[in-house]
Image 1 (cartoon, rainbow, N blue to C red):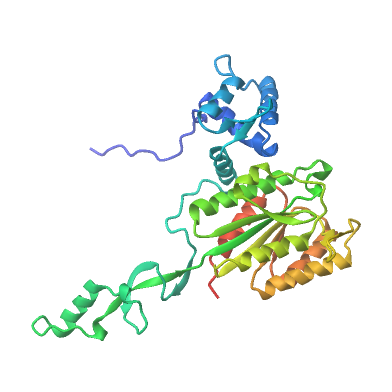
Image 2: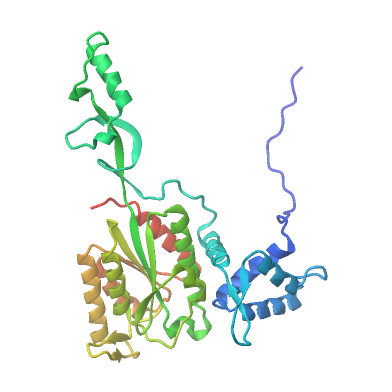
Length: 373
């Protein structure tokens, strides 16, 4: 008697959202709001209360006040200790890491931590990273790399057990592979135009920086990432300070940003180095030898743009490509970016805010595979 054949196909059912505790539901919203408010806890909770009134986020059993208490108990916030009457709340390193991980999940998706934390190339040779293969011993190979077991096996095969001897031709070493470690500097424009015209451009830039830093810290820990911001001047910021990043009443000093990035990369020992620049505006400021600023926000000033092309060419001579992510579609400004990119022989992307993170991630992943020169 034949068995009845089971019909193959798809079974459709109504989507059931994964279970979340009241805290988890509010925490997802809280992480978004605290990023937009640049770490202002009081403003974030005020926004959360307004959303609760409109969308009924809480219940009589679990209120916003209960959520704040859980944030304290779970170690995400701490009461600020002050000698005066001013109180307040500080974010902890645990929350800062949670914000970076949240940005990573949003932009790059769920990713497993890599084992080696390096970028492999196809080159084989003397190194400290084994690949599981063996080759004949060559003069100059590290003696510690000699495989005793495989070498003795060769000696037995070549000379026999009765008249055992071990020659140089019997020696084999465990082969190794070079690792292409990457040093990256991420430049973020914090000039006033990053919040002009009713469009928040700084928050997506912060999220990209947090996501990229968490990616490197967890998946490629032997790489390095430095983040710098540039307005009238340029200065480095710590990764832990990214959630608090804000724009200022600044012009755009692109030359100062690239110069600082080059100074940082000169001190790195990694063979592969690169600069990522996120900006939305034209260069409008320069540092002068006497300590003053030369500023011109009206159009593209040749005095400023020529300095930009010069510093881009200097980076090219050092073998450091600059990838510019231009989050505006102004054809007038694209001409400058095209010329800047040509001077460096780098790359440029003209992108909106929605796909900024995906493009930076893809470029980072592609660049890490290049061969050491």
